Every structure is written in structure tokens, then in C-alpha cells.
Image (tube, rainbow, N blue to C red; front, side, top):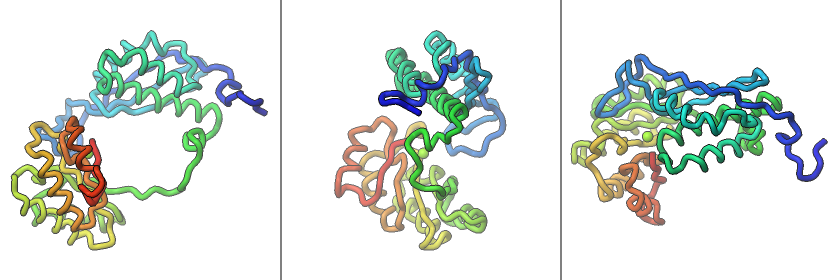
Amino acid sequence: MLTPGQTPSSSLSPVRIRSIVAAPLFGESPKGGWSAEIRPEDSIHALIAVHTDAGITGYGSVFTDGRLVQAALQVLEPLFRGENALQPERVTEKLHQNTFWMGRGGTLTHTISGIDIALWDILGKVTGLSVGSLLGGRYIERVRPYCSLLMEMPERMHDVVAPFKARGFTAFKVGWGPFGRTNDAGLDRAIIAATRDALGPDVQLFVDPGASDAHWPQGLKWALRTAEMLADYQVGWFEEALKPDALEEFCTCVAPARCRLPVARC
Ligand SMILES: [Mg+2]
């Protein structure tokens, strides 16, 4: 029984972090859509394992080059070694607070996020509770997945989406490919029209042009005009409508009455 002011983690004996290792993932990968396509020798994901003195291991994942994650772990090691793995929020905050000046938002931040996931995994294993319960409870028990596919020219879009609709997907995200890259608003519309036609009116559709790609040629006017077009096809959200650092333009897009659908940054 907990007394007032006592938290579950403070009532548990500390579980100390002994080491953290990363496994970069290499190998063949589906086409990603980037200008510089992913090669088998590239690493864009890594797995993280947090080992503890209690013999419990927590696992996390990081969406960045695993070799960078390995280097970041060397930098972070003096900060996490010996820490109590049962206090994920405090330990994660300690790592952030002590390293912001080395590149907030970059490799270190990515790596800390993977450690954070692994620490919650450990707390769940020790307490026997799901991470959902530890974070305050679940509102829903089932989540609708969406099928994420690369765009092709309009005449190809039926063949792109149809096999996955036949497998039972009821939501799709399509993106990258030729969309937004030709200065041809008619082509952009035709791709979306063909996709909506292939999916039918009852399937959820989301669009991600991939403005984080190198040398993205479009700006705010294109994003606003394209958002209007997408709304005509009941698109649920517009992801990566602008370059990642175009913060002022994103603010313009999300201002009331500027776009009829949600606009997200990558
Ligand atoms: Mg995206």
C-alpha cells in the first residue's frame, strides 16, 4: 500500500543501468522515396538494449543511423551508468538537460528517445503493468493501422493501392514519388483523384508529399493551394507539406481558416 507522496517507483528497489548497447540495422530495405535511395549498406534504424544489474533488459528503437547511436551512447555513458532504470522520466530528463548544447534535435536526442522507450519497457516488466497503464491508462483497445505507400503516376495508382485494399486495409497514406516535384498542379490532382477513385469514398486517405527530401522545390503557396485540392478528396491530413525548418510557414498553414485539413511537420 502506498502512503501519500510515495510513488510506485520509489517503493521499488532501484534497478541500476549496467550498460546500453545499440544494434544498427542494415540490409535490404523497401524503396523509401528519397532522392538518394536507401542502400543495403545504409543504416536508418537501430535497436537499443538497456541492460540492468537485475538481469532485466529493456528494448527501444531509434530512427537514425545506428553508427551515430553507438557514438551517442559513448557520450551519454557517464550520465546513464548506475542510474535507476525504474525512473524513466527523471533519467531521460537528466540526459536531455546535460547534453542540449551538443545538438538538441539531432543524434543525441534520437538516442535518448530510444533509451526512454527501453526504460519504460523495464518499468513495465518490473511492475507487471503495460506502458499504457503506467502512462495513465488507455482510452481505446484497438487502433486502426494505415497502409503507407509511395505515389506513382496517376495511371499506376490503382495497381499501387488495390492489393492492399483487398487485404483489408481501411486507411492509406500515400506520398513522395512525383507528387509536388513537377510544378504541375494538374498532375498532383490527378494522382490524388486516381487514388481516391481506386480506394472508394469510405477509405481514409492521408497524404505526405515528402518535403523533407533533399532540394524540395515547393513553398508556402504550393502548400496552401495543394491543401485546398486535397480537401476536395476528403484527405484526412497533409504531412510534410513544407520543409522541416519552415516554422513560420507551418504556423501560417495551421492558422484558422487557412487550411481545411490538418497540416503536420515531419
Ligand atoms: Mg513523413
